[in-house]
Amino acid sequence: MCTLSDQHSTLPALYDTVRTFQIPAEYFIKLIDGTEMDLTTASYRSFEDLYRYCYHVASTVGLICIHIFGFHDSRAQECAEACGIAFQLTNILRDVKEDLKRHRIYLPLEDFQRFNYTESELRLELMDERFRALMRFEAQRARTFYLKARPLVGMLERDSRPAFWAMFESYQCLLKNIERRNYDVLSHRVQLTLQNKFQKW
Image (cartoon, rainbow, N blue to C red; front, side, top):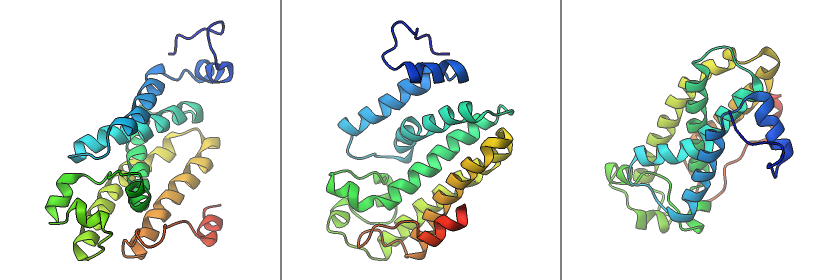
């Protein structure tokens, strides 16, 4: 548990939340480390490297959230980690063009080689079957993490489940929309439709 004290805390509301829900301080430290990665790293060589980034910026958030939601199964932490990876991979697929504008490529470079597609071609926004095959591969990878994360809803306190499930289904729907667009994330940003949002609520 975080060892901050009320006297030294610059964020008393955060400290109170950490103390009340017994959230491990390491999650916050890793989250900060993850945001710092964006200042120093513009691409990731392997999925192992990308996983580490996704864990720091997204899985830590999920781990923090389940302490607030309340959970009754130790496996919930593994599911929350997988959920964060799934969400972040979905964000990466959606934001390929926006990240290019920031001179960042989050898709693993080893996967470019797998499909004989290059970073230069991505920067030219060349959207051919090789690009779609790459995106399809990454989308399927995200789906494996959604599958691992799905049992989490049943491990949370009952009154927390609807909020989590709405978020979980929204991200899955976003991934489906990317797939329905045949992975065209370069001409328009894929978003949830109004109908999607109503269906989740």
